[in-house]
Length: 364
Image 1 (cartoon, rainbow, N blue to C red):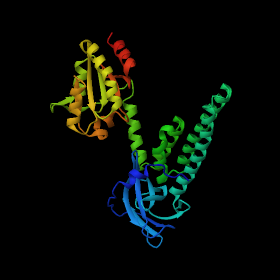
Image 2 (image 1 turned 135 degrees about the horizontal axis):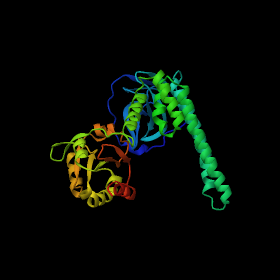
Image 3 (image 1 turned 45 degrees about the horizontal axis):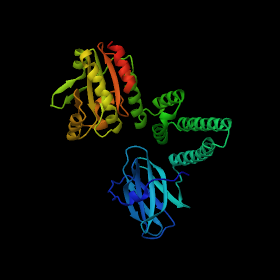
């Protein structure tokens, strides 16, 4: 099964947090009394401790409240060094019986973990195949035909893996694990597989929180696609005044809505291009409506001044929870859309030369 490959050292430097007692992990292990066992969530920066305890008589108990089915890590620490680490699925209000064996765990009577472990083993096997093919693909001593064959095999393995994701998700609807796996892998599924699964979830698991979130995202994406009427944004500007997108659209020939943040490096890198089109086309009818996903007002306003963003700037300082970001299904930044004088969205997510070319085309 798949083991966690994360920064254990960083994890050990973090403190534990008290958790409300709802989901319970009762474990047995072959480790010494006094060894520490940690339950941790898995974040982009590493492991975040949720609960911990000491091994006593080969047993331990950990607890956490979770609102949705989630991936968690178990680590056993002896003399400040990890001696075992593995991941597993935790579900709201479910008590699990966990047994450590040979640096892996067994969790009987847990359908979600049975599916997770089986899929993890499959992924590991597929990854090994791909690694072998990558070594051939990068081997300059092989012929072009041999390297092309390796690339085709990589594509075939990848396609098979994504197809397996769809098969496992579809085959476990309704269940807690199906929504979790859909959330993990939806971007890798083919359009037909994704549509089929979403329809299954709608009929059999309409209350699944992962399905509901994705359904809302897909709806927002469809309703704000190119050719559709723009959706209203009403946020305060840097002077504290309400500034509606509708009023800006009404007063200009073309509006560039620019989602960005002071902490976003790609946004900062793109800003010279935005300044360039503003300087060239503002007098011809272009206005920019900048929507910041900052949470700190000082950082936001300082960045605006430092970067010379002399156009409309608004924010609710709610970061990714911004109503504007949710309305337009903004999942990454920088993200842009162009709105013409009729209120139609005419382009999305253009940058650099492509952005300037499209603006020039409309305002010619």
